[in-house]
Each structure stands twice: as C-alpha cells, then as structure tokens.
Image (cartoon, rainbow, N blue to C red):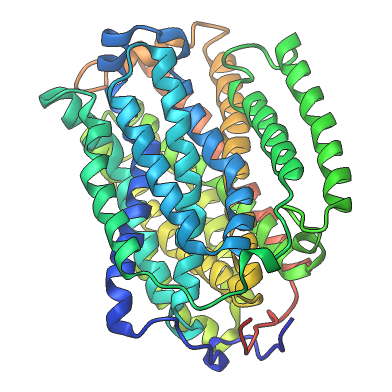
Length: 505
C-alpha cells in the first residue's frame, strides 16, 4: 500500500496512462459502453405489448427486466476482481463482445423463454461494462480531473436510462421490437474498435506472477446473490412473501451467504476481500450508495405512475417530470470538485444527502392533485443534491486505493448500489401495494393498470387517484428515511477525512 495524503484531490500526482489527446477515443468508447448498459436496462419497458403479442409469455415477461438486472448485479464483484488481476482491457473487451452476442441472440429469439435467457447473456456483458468503465475512467485521469469524466459518464447514464423507454417505444411502433437489440450492434462495434485500437494499459505483472482468481468464491457469490435478488424481485409479485418459494429462496440464499463468507475467509485472493468492509472509508461508501440505490426507486419507478394517474399527464409529459433530474445531476456533479476541494469528500456528500433527504420529505407535502411543475421542481433540486452526494463518494473512494485494488473497490460500490435498488423495488413495491389495498378497501390492484390505459392516462376515478397519491407519498417518505440512513452512515461511520493516496501501484 502506498502513502496517503490530504483529503482534497490537488495532491494526486499520478500520471495518466495516456496523454490527453490519446484519451479522447477511449473516453468515447467508455461513454458508448455506458450508454449501452444504461439503455438496455429500460429500453424494453415500452415495447412489452409488441413483444408479448409476438412471442407470448405474458405471465413471465417481468423477467425481461429482472433477468438483466440480476445478471448485471451478481457479476459486478467478479468482473472487478478479474480487472484487478488481468487488467481492464481484456475484461472490457470480453464484456462488450458478450453484450453484443446477447443482443444479437435477443433479436432472433423465438419465444419468451429464449428472449429471457438471452437477456441474461446481455446482462453478463452489461456487468463488465458498468464496473470496468467506471474503473478505467479513474485510471485514465488524476484526481483533479476525475469529476469531469465522471460527470460525463453520469450524464450518459442518466440520459440513456431516461431515454430508454422512448427509444423502445419508437422502435416498436415504427419498426420492429427486434431493432431494440439490433441497434446495439453498430454502436457496440464502434466502442469495441475504439477500445482495441486506442486503449493501452500501463505495464503490469504477468498473469503467471499474480494470485489466481478464487473461482469457487466467485461461483458462491454469483449463486448467493442471484437467489437473494430473485427472492426480492419476485416476492409479492410472482408469489406471496410468506409462501414456500419465498421462504425457500431466502433460506437457500442465507446458507449460500454463510458458505461464501467461510470460503472467502480462507481464499488467498477472495472475490470480495475482507478489506472492502474492514476499511471504514470503503465500507461507509458502500452503505451510503446502497441507500442511494434504495431511494432512487421512488423517482424512477413511482413518479411516472404518479404523474399519469394523479396529475393526468400523458406518457411524454410524465417522462419529462422525471427527466429534469438528469439536467441538474451532471451539472452539480461536474461542479462538486470546487466544493470537495475546499471542505473534503465527506462533508460535500453530507450536504448533498442532507438536502436530498429534505427534498424527498417535501414530496408528501405537495397539494392534491397539484401542478406538474411542482414535482418537476423537486426532481430538479433532487438531481442537484444527489450530484453533490454520489460523485464525491465515488471519486473519493477510488482515490483511497491503488490500481491493483481499484477494480474491486469500484465493483463493490456499484454492487451495493444495485442491491439497494433491488431491495428498494421490493420494499417500496410492498409499501405501495399495502397502501393501495387499504385505500381501495381491498380492491383489485389491476384497476390501476386499467386506469392508465389509453393515451391520456387520466381516466382514473378520484378515489383511485387519491389512493395512488397516498401510496407514492408513503414511498417518498421511505426514500427520505433511506437518505437519512445514508446521512447517519457518513456522520458516524465514514472517517472525517478520506485517506487519499499520493502514489499509484
């Protein structure tokens, strides 16, 4: 381990592996890869009617999303360790190739089962894209310049994720749903060519001199996480929470988690090493960004439904209410270095999450039914607050480790955020359903979907609209609690100053 310096970034003197001009094609490839991974997380949502009409399988179509999410999440720690062991380039190239193969297979799927299986293949590649892109960005730029590249990647992620449903709907309506996957091929091919042609890593030890990858641990991490996330994603939807499938999945995941801990403690080079949780800085960032994944479910999942059923907006206008968050988030993230260079990573993140908590708590105070500009303004402010929160934590935690640990550290952070998102979807979904059932007197929850059918989405009766309003209010209250938990972690778990390294491995 190298020496540490002050908490601000101006002391990082590590040289980038390529001059600024040589980094541009690589950055372009990273942005394309990030865009593909983000887009494919949401692009299928508006094309579901066309896909189901062609392939059938309505009862299991939710696995088009869950399968991709599970594959991305469970592979993040594995890819992080592989990139630290064998280098970033081979992992990124393999991830892009796997993602493109999955996309091609999805385009030629013949039934819903095959499409779900090929979406999992896509997700296996998407896991490499997410983690390795973030790690390479930290490798390419010294600490003073990292906010700029991370802000670009955040912008690409946000725009792609929000634009996904619109792109999917347009392709399904005016072309064919299979083009949702075929369009990945030329974009991914360009990204692959740029990486192969322009990305050159610094010389590292030969693979033979490095410790071997803990493949038994990797398999246990994969299986334990897959079972746990399956239980969280499908519980309360495919089967009741206290049913035999849920109890069996939770029980099996608990056994596998215990086995994973036992195996990883004995492994020479564990996939999820103990130091990820023993170091206060990394552990605190993992927990804080896990809470971020949890709270982000409120705006990304429930706000569009609120905008359509309560405010009476159409799908495009409802999407705009959410998308304004993507305007302020990257701007705030890009400017965050001016804040943390003065007061440090920790206090910058504390200010950001503190403001986010207040903004989320203000949502239930909006009048009923209210005007569209009111939640839009809150989302604009929320994006600015979360930009101050997330980016300083990612840049800060990446700067506390050297090259040989950066991939594992970045993957652990993204892994916790993804698990938080899955947990949030399950938890807040259960909260919303409980409130709706209570307000509707135990009625049929499918009435919400029927009320949103049609172009306007505003035909819901006043009782239903008030029920949805109350359900979303409870979800935002829960999101504010999640933000409060992140605030407590930063106040009482995170060190006062991040131990930033002044050298590189």
